[in-house]
Image (tube, rainbow, N blue to C red):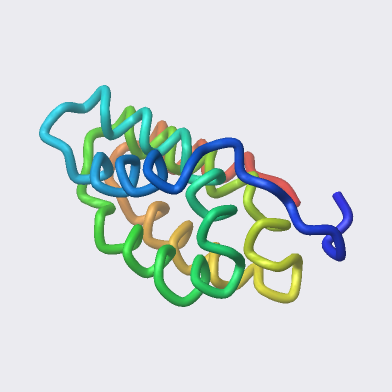
Length: 116
């Protein structure tokens, strides 16, 4: 992927707001759907806001069910270009490090298989 060319989101601004709200939903299905749309949310926010605002927000939400955490690990593993490329990988790694501290082995294993 070429970092010099902007990447476009496939969701509307209204859907972005809905997905951000759904990250804290009582319903696990909505949280999973929101987590699966994290790359699109980040594309709407742009690299800087993603790094400075959204990823720290995600780090606060890490007390969730195993299935949600697995999907979160997968989403984060595909976001290197979205946050601005390898020079900003540390912003994703901070969240992945917190995920590695969770009890569920399957979640930690998902983080382990991420390769950039």
